Structure formats: structure tokens, C-alpha cells
Image 1 (cartoon, rainbow, N blue to C red):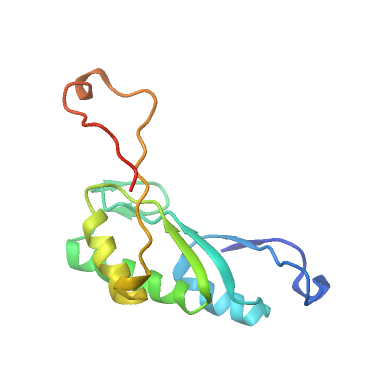
Image 2: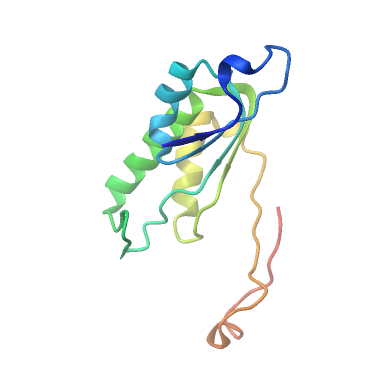
Length: 138
């Protein structure tokens, strides 16, 4: 995991603290706690989509139960370092969005969902033009 930001010991307590992490979010709670970081106001997650593909650094092919368990563990880890008024943004494929929504409701409570943002790539493959529906933002 990579931590980017000012040295924790150099940041005044009354100053807004900015820290970015890159790596497995399931490790963040321990690393941020050990570093003395204050609770986070924002978490942006881009977890594996479970696309069935294999990449150099990880496999994106798990059975559904294993994938949901990984997402649950990740969200629980993130929740442990969040402020009560914090915001979690998660980028995920539409094929597993329903599973993530249920898992987020379980971890954060169903009343804490604000909404979803759906976006469409500007350019899309020609074979998708006929099948793509209108994009809505809720």
C-alpha cells in the first residue's frame, strides 16, 4: 500500500488533513490507525469487478460468494476509519451493482444510501449503439 500526503507528525491538528492511499483497501484501517490519521471524510474505492479476467497483479475471477465476502470485508475495513458524516464512493460495473448495494446497506445501513451516478462513455463500440438505453442519474 502506498500513502501519499504530508507527514502525519507535520500536520497541525486544526488543519484539514489530506491523505491518499493506493492498494488493498482492506489494509487501510490498520495502516491509517498506526499512522495516527484522523477519521476519513471521503473514501473512493475501485474494487475488482469480478469480470472473470486475469490481470498481472490480481485475478478478477472469483465465485460470487467469495467476491461478496471480499467486498464486505473491504467495506467493513473502510467503515472503521470513516467519520460518521463521511462519504464512500464506489466505482463498480453494472453487472454486480445490485450485490454491492445490498452489501453497502448491510455495512452502512440502508438509510445511509444517497444515490447512484450512472455515466456513459462518450465513445462506445458500434455493436452497442442499438442496445444502449438512455442514461439516467438518480
